[in-house]
Amino acid sequence: MKKTNNIWVLAPVLGTIIFVMVYIIATFFYPGGSQVDKNSIGFSWINNYWCNLLNENAINGQHNPAKPIAMAGMLVLCLTLTFFWFLFPRYINIGKFAKRTIQISGTLSLFATL
Image (tube, rainbow, N blue to C red; front, top):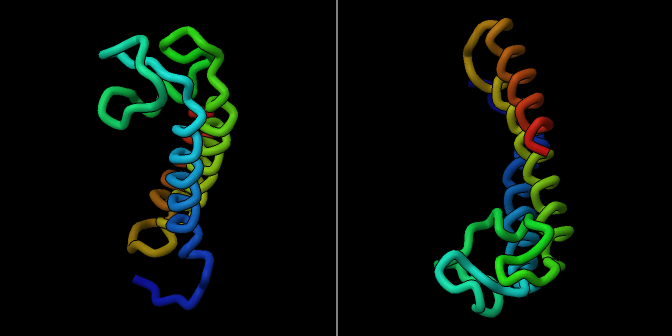
């Protein structure tokens, strides 16, 4: 394993922290409704899924203003993971073909997620 003083190695950690913060912020804008109670108010960490924040309309039928915020969080997450999959193979002892395969497939899969 290579030793490095490169600050870019911390970028995936920072990106993950930003993603979590943005997703927490999005929960405050979710109007309500869950699989348990369609008339509940707000986001429930027990009864809602994170993907509920990405829906056009909340489960209670109201327009979901949390969607753009959650989409921004997903963009941050995808960019963070793309960066991770690009950097990760540089720090493990595998062949050049395997490194390129990890970098390319990791990056393509995350762009497909968006």
